Image (cartoon, rainbow, N blue to C red; front, side, top):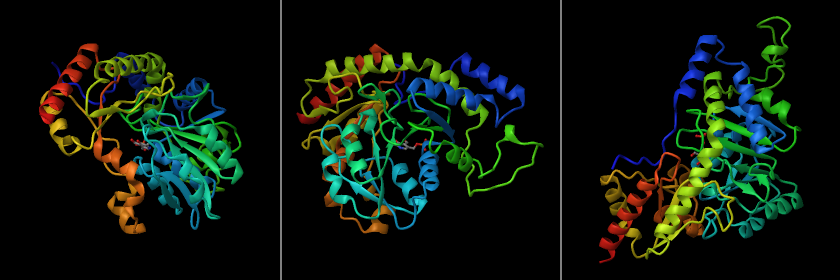
Length: 382
Ligand SMILES: Cc1ncc(COP(=O)(O)O)c(C=O)c1O
């Protein structure tokens, strides 16, 4: 059996062709490709606007910065997430306030949020953990009650929906990542989607140095003024071109992920000592980012034995995420956090194994994964 990587971008002649056409055009930034990618992303998600950025982290940081969320403010986020969710808050100058997860989705426990709200709270930023949508309608009521921004880190959730709405559109903004193992890739890159155009102009301005005029609005080339402080968080034409082609393939990618998830679920649902983290929750509404299992307390101490066995059989895996953020050295030290408050988030970090189900994974691969998983678990419990 060939190697089955955890994630593998599917790149073919279409990406190669568009990249060389951009290179030949000589327009590497400020061109039509980033505009086209934004237009297509907006169309796919149903957003009022889509703003391309250099990464998901940059998008979140840009949003806090633009909305003046910073020193003295607090932003509520899940403990169980990639450090980027917390870093974006920290970089803005605000303080991340961590909330434990719920079982079995691993998403933020909504019932624990209200008591963390103070007069300093400015926003709640949720993460659709592994592409499992958070109950946004419930959160919307809470954010309205306290007049807070509601933001959605959708880094792993392209294609996930809450009811008929794409994730990212119930809150004030949604942030996507196009890092290589994600649903679609631009190598590095991200997108902000908005359900109104209220902040579009300012976000666009602040993602590009705070220029008063974009390139096509300038009377003379090179002549501009700067009326705001801003970053350089633009997406290049090369990255955007990759995104256009990848997005055109996304429906078939997602279909394959759903198929793979269901297939592997059928194969391993009766295995003892593991539980499957739902991605579909009875309905097809998750984004099936990966196939995640939680090991029972009994076999969790053998997690690395299992991972090594899979690796020896060329089966890739990953851990989302290796620590709840409050357990990471930087945050533990800075905020002197008591990690006993993040029991569920810690259980996910300590007992999870994430397996590949991307469009690069065949049915034969899935049979091989389930066969080997069963083999090693049976060996361990003997
Ligand atoms: C939940 C979450 N948010 C943000 C990010 C960071 O995305 P990017 O690398 O595009 O900044 C990641 C990366 O995996 C993630 O998992």
